[in-house]
Image (cartoon, rainbow, N blue to C red; front, top):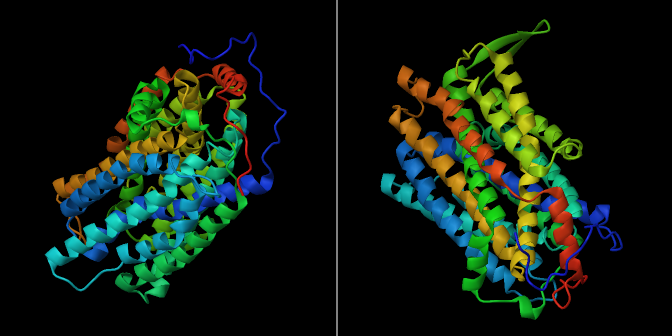
Length: 485
Protein backbone atom coordinates (compact mmCIF):
# COMPACT_ATOMS: atom_id res chain seq x y z
CA UNK A 1 0.00 0.00 0.00
CA UNK A 2 1.40 3.38 -1.00
CA UNK A 3 0.89 6.52 1.10
CA UNK A 4 0.09 9.94 -0.26
CA UNK A 5 3.05 11.07 -2.43
CA UNK A 6 3.98 13.92 -0.08
CA UNK A 7 4.67 11.48 2.76
CA UNK A 8 8.37 11.36 3.75
CA UNK A 9 9.97 7.94 4.24
CA UNK A 10 10.83 6.93 7.81
CA UNK A 11 13.27 4.28 8.89
CA UNK A 12 11.63 3.41 12.21
CA UNK A 13 8.06 4.39 13.12
CA UNK A 14 7.79 5.74 16.66
CA UNK A 15 4.98 7.11 18.76
CA UNK A 16 5.26 10.85 19.40
CA UNK A 17 4.90 11.26 23.15
CA UNK A 18 5.62 15.01 23.19
CA UNK A 19 1.95 16.01 22.94
CA UNK A 20 -0.09 16.50 26.13
CA UNK A 21 -2.06 13.35 26.90
CA UNK A 22 -5.81 13.39 27.40
CA UNK A 23 -6.87 13.87 30.99
CA UNK A 24 -9.03 11.39 32.89
CA UNK A 25 -11.71 14.09 33.05
CA UNK A 26 -11.93 14.30 29.27
CA UNK A 27 -11.86 10.53 28.76
CA UNK A 28 -14.71 10.10 31.21
CA UNK A 29 -16.55 13.10 29.77
CA UNK A 30 -16.38 11.66 26.28
CA UNK A 31 -17.50 8.23 27.49
CA UNK A 32 -20.69 9.62 29.04
CA UNK A 33 -22.00 10.30 25.53
CA UNK A 34 -21.93 6.59 24.75
CA UNK A 35 -23.62 5.82 28.05
CA UNK A 36 -26.42 8.07 26.85
CA UNK A 37 -26.51 6.61 23.34
CA UNK A 38 -26.62 3.04 24.59
CA UNK A 39 -29.57 3.70 26.86
CA UNK A 40 -31.50 4.17 23.62
CA UNK A 41 -29.61 1.63 21.55
CA UNK A 42 -30.12 -1.18 24.07
CA UNK A 43 -33.80 -0.30 24.29
CA UNK A 44 -34.04 -0.50 20.48
CA UNK A 45 -32.29 -3.87 20.37
CA UNK A 46 -33.94 -5.71 23.26
CA UNK A 47 -37.34 -4.19 23.89
CA UNK A 48 -38.53 -2.34 20.78
CA UNK A 49 -39.64 -5.45 18.81
CA UNK A 50 -41.61 -6.99 21.69
CA UNK A 51 -43.05 -3.54 22.51
CA UNK A 52 -44.41 -3.25 18.98
CA UNK A 53 -45.88 -6.79 18.92
CA UNK A 54 -47.06 -7.32 22.50
CA UNK A 55 -47.90 -3.75 23.66
CA UNK A 56 -48.41 -1.55 20.61
CA UNK A 57 -50.28 -4.28 18.74
CA UNK A 58 -48.44 -4.74 15.42
CA UNK A 59 -48.16 -8.15 13.82
CA UNK A 60 -44.66 -9.68 13.80
CA UNK A 61 -44.39 -9.37 10.01
CA UNK A 62 -45.58 -5.73 10.01
CA UNK A 63 -43.10 -4.97 12.81
CA UNK A 64 -40.25 -6.50 10.81
CA UNK A 65 -41.10 -4.52 7.69
CA UNK A 66 -41.52 -1.30 9.67
CA UNK A 67 -38.09 -1.73 11.28
CA UNK A 68 -36.56 -2.44 7.87
CA UNK A 69 -38.02 0.67 6.22
CA UNK A 70 -37.39 3.09 9.07
CA UNK A 71 -33.87 1.87 9.80
CA UNK A 72 -32.84 2.00 6.15
CA UNK A 73 -34.14 5.58 6.14
CA UNK A 74 -32.07 6.16 9.27
CA UNK A 75 -28.94 4.51 7.88
CA UNK A 76 -29.03 6.52 4.65
CA UNK A 77 -29.03 9.69 6.71
CA UNK A 78 -25.76 8.82 8.50
CA UNK A 79 -23.32 9.68 5.67
CA UNK A 80 -25.30 12.85 4.96
CA UNK A 81 -25.03 13.84 8.63
CA UNK A 82 -21.31 13.08 8.56
CA UNK A 83 -20.70 15.27 5.53
CA UNK A 84 -22.73 18.08 7.10
CA UNK A 85 -20.71 17.81 10.31
CA UNK A 86 -17.40 17.71 8.40
CA UNK A 87 -18.29 21.07 6.84
CA UNK A 88 -19.55 22.69 10.03
CA UNK A 89 -17.53 25.57 11.48
CA UNK A 90 -18.39 26.96 14.94
CA UNK A 91 -16.46 28.29 17.90
CA UNK A 92 -17.22 24.97 19.65
CA UNK A 93 -15.88 22.83 16.81
CA UNK A 94 -17.46 20.67 14.12
CA UNK A 95 -19.13 17.89 16.10
CA UNK A 96 -19.82 19.00 19.67
CA UNK A 97 -22.61 21.51 18.82
CA UNK A 98 -24.82 18.72 17.45
CA UNK A 99 -24.38 16.66 20.62
CA UNK A 100 -25.71 19.53 22.73
CA UNK A 101 -28.29 20.83 20.26
CA UNK A 102 -30.18 17.56 19.77
CA UNK A 103 -30.03 16.24 23.35
CA UNK A 104 -33.53 17.43 24.31
CA UNK A 105 -35.22 16.58 20.97
CA UNK A 106 -33.84 13.04 21.34
CA UNK A 107 -35.45 12.73 24.78
CA UNK A 108 -38.82 13.92 23.45
CA UNK A 109 -38.60 11.54 20.47
CA UNK A 110 -38.09 8.57 22.78
CA UNK A 111 -41.31 9.31 24.67
CA UNK A 112 -43.33 9.72 21.46
CA UNK A 113 -42.05 6.48 19.92
CA UNK A 114 -43.03 4.43 23.00
CA UNK A 115 -46.49 5.96 23.31
CA UNK A 116 -49.43 3.79 22.21
CA UNK A 117 -52.23 5.95 20.72
CA UNK A 118 -55.91 4.98 20.60
CA UNK A 119 -56.08 4.68 16.82
CA UNK A 120 -57.22 2.06 14.36
CA UNK A 121 -54.85 -0.54 12.92
CA UNK A 122 -53.80 1.67 10.00
CA UNK A 123 -53.51 4.78 12.14
CA UNK A 124 -51.29 3.02 14.66
CA UNK A 125 -49.03 1.70 11.94
CA UNK A 126 -48.63 5.20 10.47
CA UNK A 127 -47.96 6.58 13.94
CA UNK A 128 -45.29 3.92 14.51
CA UNK A 129 -43.55 4.78 11.23
CA UNK A 130 -43.60 8.54 11.83
CA UNK A 131 -42.54 8.57 15.48
CA UNK A 132 -39.78 5.98 15.07
CA UNK A 133 -38.41 7.82 12.02
CA UNK A 134 -38.40 11.03 14.05
CA UNK A 135 -36.58 9.31 16.90
CA UNK A 136 -33.87 7.85 14.68
CA UNK A 137 -33.30 11.20 12.96
CA UNK A 138 -32.59 12.78 16.35
CA UNK A 139 -30.44 9.80 17.34
CA UNK A 140 -28.41 10.17 14.14
CA UNK A 141 -27.97 13.91 14.67
CA UNK A 142 -26.36 13.13 18.04
CA UNK A 143 -24.59 9.83 17.44
CA UNK A 144 -22.81 10.55 14.14
CA UNK A 145 -21.04 13.69 15.47
CA UNK A 146 -20.38 11.89 18.77
CA UNK A 147 -18.66 8.98 17.02
CA UNK A 148 -16.65 11.36 14.82
CA UNK A 149 -15.56 13.31 17.91
CA UNK A 150 -13.39 10.39 19.04
CA UNK A 151 -11.29 10.80 15.90
CA UNK A 152 -10.48 14.46 16.63
CA UNK A 153 -9.99 14.72 20.39
CA UNK A 154 -6.47 13.28 19.98
CA UNK A 155 -4.21 12.45 17.01
CA UNK A 156 -2.82 9.36 18.77
CA UNK A 157 -4.05 5.89 17.74
CA UNK A 158 -2.86 4.54 21.09
CA UNK A 159 -4.84 7.13 23.03
CA UNK A 160 -7.92 6.52 20.88
CA UNK A 161 -7.79 2.85 21.86
CA UNK A 162 -7.68 3.95 25.51
CA UNK A 163 -10.60 6.33 24.96
CA UNK A 164 -12.48 3.53 23.23
CA UNK A 165 -12.12 1.40 26.35
CA UNK A 166 -13.56 4.19 28.53
CA UNK A 167 -16.29 4.71 25.99
CA UNK A 168 -17.40 1.12 26.00
CA UNK A 169 -17.24 0.72 29.73
CA UNK A 170 -19.74 3.60 29.82
CA UNK A 171 -21.72 2.03 26.97
CA UNK A 172 -22.09 -1.19 28.92
CA UNK A 173 -23.18 0.77 31.98
CA UNK A 174 -25.94 2.14 29.76
CA UNK A 175 -26.85 -1.38 28.71
CA UNK A 176 -26.79 -2.44 32.36
CA UNK A 177 -29.19 0.35 33.30
CA UNK A 178 -31.67 -0.78 30.65
CA UNK A 179 -31.35 -4.47 31.43
CA UNK A 180 -31.70 -3.98 35.16
CA UNK A 181 -34.38 -1.29 35.29
CA UNK A 182 -36.48 -1.06 32.12
CA UNK A 183 -39.14 -3.70 32.76
CA UNK A 184 -39.29 -2.88 36.48
CA UNK A 185 -39.85 0.82 35.73
CA UNK A 186 -42.48 -0.03 33.12
CA UNK A 187 -44.35 -2.16 35.65
CA UNK A 188 -44.15 0.32 38.52
CA UNK A 189 -44.66 3.58 36.65
CA UNK A 190 -47.51 2.09 34.64
CA UNK A 191 -49.16 0.34 37.59
CA UNK A 192 -49.01 -2.95 35.67
CA UNK A 193 -50.18 -1.34 32.41
CA UNK A 194 -47.36 -1.51 29.85
CA UNK A 195 -49.13 1.02 27.60
CA UNK A 196 -48.69 3.63 30.35
CA UNK A 197 -45.41 2.34 31.74
CA UNK A 198 -43.33 2.62 28.59
CA UNK A 199 -43.75 6.37 27.85
CA UNK A 200 -43.18 7.23 31.54
CA UNK A 201 -40.06 5.08 31.55
CA UNK A 202 -38.75 6.72 28.40
CA UNK A 203 -39.35 10.13 29.97
CA UNK A 204 -37.11 9.16 32.90
CA UNK A 205 -34.43 7.88 30.56
CA UNK A 206 -34.76 10.98 28.36
CA UNK A 207 -33.92 13.35 31.22
CA UNK A 208 -30.89 11.23 32.10
CA UNK A 209 -29.72 11.03 28.46
CA UNK A 210 -30.03 14.78 27.85
CA UNK A 211 -27.97 15.52 30.95
CA UNK A 212 -25.24 13.09 29.96
CA UNK A 213 -24.96 14.47 26.42
CA UNK A 214 -24.65 18.04 27.68
CA UNK A 215 -21.92 16.89 30.07
CA UNK A 216 -20.01 15.37 27.14
CA UNK A 217 -20.26 18.69 25.31
CA UNK A 218 -18.79 20.64 28.22
CA UNK A 219 -15.98 18.22 29.12
CA UNK A 220 -14.49 17.51 25.67
CA UNK A 221 -12.44 19.45 23.11
CA UNK A 222 -11.76 19.06 19.38
CA UNK A 223 -8.03 19.17 18.63
CA UNK A 224 -7.38 17.48 15.28
CA UNK A 225 -8.72 19.56 12.42
CA UNK A 226 -7.89 19.52 8.70
CA UNK A 227 -6.51 22.59 7.03
CA UNK A 228 -8.77 24.32 4.50
CA UNK A 229 -6.71 22.79 1.69
CA UNK A 230 -7.83 19.36 2.81
CA UNK A 231 -11.50 20.11 2.29
CA UNK A 232 -12.76 18.63 -0.95
CA UNK A 233 -16.00 17.94 -2.68
CA UNK A 234 -18.46 15.38 -1.38
CA UNK A 235 -17.88 13.17 -4.41
CA UNK A 236 -14.16 13.06 -3.68
CA UNK A 237 -14.83 12.14 -0.05
CA UNK A 238 -17.11 9.28 -1.10
CA UNK A 239 -14.59 8.05 -3.67
CA UNK A 240 -11.84 7.99 -1.02
CA UNK A 241 -14.14 6.13 1.34
CA UNK A 242 -14.86 3.33 -1.13
CA UNK A 243 -11.15 3.04 -1.97
CA UNK A 244 -10.32 2.71 1.75
CA UNK A 245 -9.98 -1.09 1.86
CA UNK A 246 -9.55 -1.37 5.65
CA UNK A 247 -12.75 0.61 6.16
CA UNK A 248 -14.65 -1.54 3.65
CA UNK A 249 -13.63 -4.71 5.50
CA UNK A 250 -14.54 -3.52 9.00
CA UNK A 251 -17.72 -1.98 7.57
CA UNK A 252 -18.94 -5.26 6.07
CA UNK A 253 -17.91 -7.13 9.22
CA UNK A 254 -19.93 -4.64 11.26
CA UNK A 255 -23.10 -5.44 9.31
CA UNK A 256 -22.73 -9.12 10.18
CA UNK A 257 -21.66 -8.39 13.76
CA UNK A 258 -24.69 -6.19 14.44
CA UNK A 259 -27.08 -8.59 12.74
CA UNK A 260 -25.75 -11.30 15.06
CA UNK A 261 -26.12 -9.33 18.29
CA UNK A 262 -29.44 -7.67 17.37
CA UNK A 263 -31.09 -10.98 16.48
CA UNK A 264 -30.03 -12.48 19.81
CA UNK A 265 -30.93 -9.37 21.80
CA UNK A 266 -34.35 -8.94 20.20
CA UNK A 267 -35.13 -12.65 20.58
CA UNK A 268 -34.34 -12.63 24.32
CA UNK A 269 -37.71 -11.29 25.64
CA UNK A 270 -39.60 -13.69 23.37
CA UNK A 271 -37.36 -16.56 24.52
CA UNK A 272 -38.19 -16.02 28.19
CA UNK A 273 -41.84 -14.98 27.85
CA UNK A 274 -42.87 -17.85 25.58
CA UNK A 275 -40.24 -20.62 25.81
CA UNK A 276 -38.69 -20.55 29.30
CA UNK A 277 -41.84 -19.06 30.91
CA UNK A 278 -42.45 -18.61 34.66
CA UNK A 279 -40.59 -21.05 36.89
CA UNK A 280 -39.58 -21.82 40.45
CA UNK A 281 -35.84 -22.33 40.81
CA UNK A 282 -34.16 -23.77 43.91
CA UNK A 283 -30.65 -22.39 44.31
CA UNK A 284 -28.48 -22.82 47.41
CA UNK A 285 -31.52 -23.89 49.39
CA UNK A 286 -33.56 -20.87 48.32
CA UNK A 287 -36.71 -21.14 46.19
CA UNK A 288 -36.97 -18.31 43.68
CA UNK A 289 -40.11 -17.36 41.76
CA UNK A 290 -38.90 -16.29 38.32
CA UNK A 291 -41.21 -14.65 35.79
CA UNK A 292 -40.73 -12.92 32.44
CA UNK A 293 -39.64 -9.61 33.99
CA UNK A 294 -37.12 -11.19 36.36
CA UNK A 295 -35.75 -13.57 33.75
CA UNK A 296 -35.33 -10.99 31.01
CA UNK A 297 -33.93 -8.27 33.27
CA UNK A 298 -31.45 -10.56 35.02
CA UNK A 299 -30.38 -12.27 31.79
CA UNK A 300 -29.64 -8.96 30.05
CA UNK A 301 -27.94 -7.61 33.18
CA UNK A 302 -25.72 -10.66 33.65
CA UNK A 303 -24.77 -10.54 29.98
CA UNK A 304 -23.97 -6.85 30.20
CA UNK A 305 -21.74 -7.32 33.25
CA UNK A 306 -19.90 -10.14 31.49
CA UNK A 307 -19.50 -8.00 28.36
CA UNK A 308 -18.18 -5.17 30.51
CA UNK A 309 -15.59 -7.46 32.09
CA UNK A 310 -14.55 -8.57 28.62
CA UNK A 311 -14.26 -4.94 27.54
CA UNK A 312 -12.11 -4.07 30.56
CA UNK A 313 -9.82 -7.02 29.78
CA UNK A 314 -9.27 -5.82 26.21
CA UNK A 315 -6.01 -4.11 27.16
CA UNK A 316 -4.61 -7.44 28.37
CA UNK A 317 -5.50 -9.12 25.09
CA UNK A 318 -4.03 -6.34 22.93
CA UNK A 319 -0.65 -6.87 24.61
CA UNK A 320 -0.59 -10.37 23.12
CA UNK A 321 -2.53 -10.11 19.85
CA UNK A 322 -3.30 -7.37 17.34
CA UNK A 323 -6.74 -5.76 17.07
CA UNK A 324 -7.94 -7.68 14.03
CA UNK A 325 -7.04 -11.09 15.53
CA UNK A 326 -8.94 -10.34 18.73
CA UNK A 327 -11.93 -8.95 16.88
CA UNK A 328 -12.13 -11.88 14.49
CA UNK A 329 -11.42 -14.71 16.93
CA UNK A 330 -13.62 -13.43 19.73
CA UNK A 331 -16.59 -12.72 17.45
CA UNK A 332 -16.43 -16.25 16.05
CA UNK A 333 -16.11 -17.73 19.56
CA UNK A 334 -19.14 -15.78 20.77
CA UNK A 335 -21.21 -16.90 17.77
CA UNK A 336 -20.27 -20.56 18.20
CA UNK A 337 -21.29 -20.46 21.86
CA UNK A 338 -24.71 -19.09 20.90
CA UNK A 339 -25.39 -22.26 18.89
CA UNK A 340 -25.40 -24.21 22.15
CA UNK A 341 -28.66 -22.49 23.18
CA UNK A 342 -30.64 -24.56 20.69
CA UNK A 343 -30.68 -27.94 22.50
CA UNK A 344 -31.40 -26.44 25.94
CA UNK A 345 -34.74 -27.13 27.64
CA UNK A 346 -36.67 -24.45 29.57
CA UNK A 347 -35.57 -25.93 32.90
CA UNK A 348 -31.85 -25.64 32.01
CA UNK A 349 -31.77 -22.18 33.55
CA UNK A 350 -28.21 -22.32 34.90
CA UNK A 351 -26.85 -23.48 31.54
CA UNK A 352 -28.79 -20.70 29.79
CA UNK A 353 -27.19 -18.11 32.05
CA UNK A 354 -23.75 -19.73 31.93
CA UNK A 355 -23.62 -19.70 28.14
CA UNK A 356 -24.75 -16.09 28.17
CA UNK A 357 -21.85 -15.17 30.46
CA UNK A 358 -19.28 -16.81 28.19
CA UNK A 359 -20.48 -15.48 24.83
CA UNK A 360 -21.00 -12.00 26.29
CA UNK A 361 -17.45 -11.97 27.67
CA UNK A 362 -15.99 -12.66 24.24
CA UNK A 363 -18.18 -9.98 22.69
CA UNK A 364 -16.84 -7.32 25.07
CA UNK A 365 -13.50 -6.94 23.30
CA UNK A 366 -15.21 -6.99 19.90
CA UNK A 367 -17.27 -3.94 20.86
CA UNK A 368 -14.28 -2.03 22.20
CA UNK A 369 -12.02 -2.68 19.24
CA UNK A 370 -14.65 -1.99 16.60
CA UNK A 371 -14.54 1.79 17.01
CA UNK A 372 -10.79 1.94 17.63
CA UNK A 373 -10.40 0.14 14.29
CA UNK A 374 -12.72 2.64 12.59
CA UNK A 375 -10.67 5.63 13.77
CA UNK A 376 -7.56 3.88 12.48
CA UNK A 377 -9.19 3.66 9.04
CA UNK A 378 -9.79 7.42 9.19
CA UNK A 379 -6.06 7.94 9.74
CA UNK A 380 -5.33 5.48 6.95
CA UNK A 381 -7.54 7.49 4.59
CA UNK A 382 -5.72 10.73 5.43
CA UNK A 383 -2.35 8.98 4.97
CA UNK A 384 -3.28 7.19 1.75
CA UNK A 385 -5.23 9.93 -0.03
CA UNK A 386 -3.89 13.11 1.60
CA UNK A 387 -7.30 14.31 2.84
CA UNK A 388 -9.06 13.75 6.16
CA UNK A 389 -12.83 13.18 6.35
CA UNK A 390 -13.34 11.89 9.89
CA UNK A 391 -17.02 12.81 10.03
CA UNK A 392 -17.80 10.92 6.83
CA UNK A 393 -15.73 7.90 7.92
CA UNK A 394 -17.55 7.62 11.23
CA UNK A 395 -20.94 8.38 9.70
CA UNK A 396 -20.44 5.72 7.04
CA UNK A 397 -19.37 3.37 9.82
CA UNK A 398 -22.61 4.07 11.63
CA UNK A 399 -24.39 3.44 8.35
CA UNK A 400 -22.94 -0.08 8.29
CA UNK A 401 -23.80 -0.55 11.95
CA UNK A 402 -27.37 0.48 11.30
CA UNK A 403 -27.61 -1.83 8.32
CA UNK A 404 -26.86 -4.64 10.76
CA UNK A 405 -29.40 -3.21 13.19
CA UNK A 406 -31.89 -3.01 10.30
CA UNK A 407 -31.40 -6.54 9.05
CA UNK A 408 -31.30 -8.00 12.55
CA UNK A 409 -34.57 -6.37 13.63
CA UNK A 410 -36.35 -7.12 10.37
CA UNK A 411 -35.25 -10.77 10.38
CA UNK A 412 -36.59 -11.24 13.90
CA UNK A 413 -40.04 -10.03 12.85
CA UNK A 414 -40.09 -11.97 9.60
CA UNK A 415 -38.82 -15.21 11.17
CA UNK A 416 -41.39 -14.98 13.96
CA UNK A 417 -44.11 -14.41 11.39
CA UNK A 418 -42.84 -17.26 9.23
CA UNK A 419 -43.03 -19.64 12.19
CA UNK A 420 -46.57 -18.61 13.08
CA UNK A 421 -45.94 -16.41 16.13
CA UNK A 422 -49.06 -14.84 17.70
CA UNK A 423 -48.52 -12.24 20.42
CA UNK A 424 -50.03 -12.82 23.87
CA UNK A 425 -51.01 -16.46 23.39
CA UNK A 426 -49.50 -19.89 24.01
CA UNK A 427 -47.20 -20.55 21.06
CA UNK A 428 -47.31 -23.54 18.72
CA UNK A 429 -44.35 -25.93 18.52
CA UNK A 430 -43.43 -24.34 15.20
CA UNK A 431 -43.35 -20.86 16.75
CA UNK A 432 -41.28 -22.08 19.71
CA UNK A 433 -38.88 -23.75 17.26
CA UNK A 434 -38.46 -20.40 15.51
CA UNK A 435 -37.80 -18.60 18.80
CA UNK A 436 -35.10 -21.16 19.69
CA UNK A 437 -33.47 -20.70 16.29
CA UNK A 438 -33.45 -16.93 16.86
CA UNK A 439 -31.38 -17.46 20.00
CA UNK A 440 -28.92 -19.87 18.40
CA UNK A 441 -28.27 -20.90 14.79
CA UNK A 442 -29.65 -17.93 12.85
CA UNK A 443 -27.58 -15.22 14.57
CA UNK A 444 -24.51 -17.47 14.78
CA UNK A 445 -24.28 -17.61 10.98
CA UNK A 446 -23.86 -13.84 10.83
CA UNK A 447 -21.38 -13.67 13.71
CA UNK A 448 -19.12 -16.29 12.16
CA UNK A 449 -19.25 -14.54 8.78
CA UNK A 450 -18.23 -11.21 10.36
CA UNK A 451 -15.26 -12.78 12.09
CA UNK A 452 -14.02 -14.49 8.94
CA UNK A 453 -14.19 -11.25 6.92
CA UNK A 454 -11.84 -9.47 9.35
CA UNK A 455 -9.08 -12.02 8.76
CA UNK A 456 -8.27 -9.97 5.63
CA UNK A 457 -7.96 -6.64 7.53
CA UNK A 458 -4.49 -5.18 6.74
CA UNK A 459 -3.74 -2.54 9.44
CA UNK A 460 -1.34 -3.96 12.02
CA UNK A 461 -0.13 -2.14 15.13
CA UNK A 462 3.27 -1.43 13.55
CA UNK A 463 1.66 -0.02 10.44
CA UNK A 464 -0.53 2.31 12.52
CA UNK A 465 2.56 3.69 14.28
CA UNK A 466 4.08 4.46 10.88
CA UNK A 467 0.88 6.11 9.66
CA UNK A 468 0.68 8.26 12.79
CA UNK A 469 4.31 9.33 12.50
CA UNK A 470 3.95 10.08 8.77
CA UNK A 471 0.85 12.21 9.34
CA UNK A 472 2.61 14.14 12.09
CA UNK A 473 5.61 14.91 9.93
CA UNK A 474 3.86 15.61 6.66
CA UNK A 475 4.96 19.03 5.55
CA UNK A 476 2.12 21.40 4.90
CA UNK A 477 -0.54 18.74 5.52
CA UNK A 478 -0.28 18.27 9.27
CA UNK A 479 -3.55 18.26 11.13
CA UNK A 480 -3.05 21.32 13.35
CA UNK A 481 -3.64 20.96 17.04
CA UNK A 482 -6.12 23.30 18.67
CA UNK A 483 -8.07 23.49 21.88
CA UNK A 484 -11.58 24.38 20.84
CA UNK A 485 -13.50 25.72 23.85
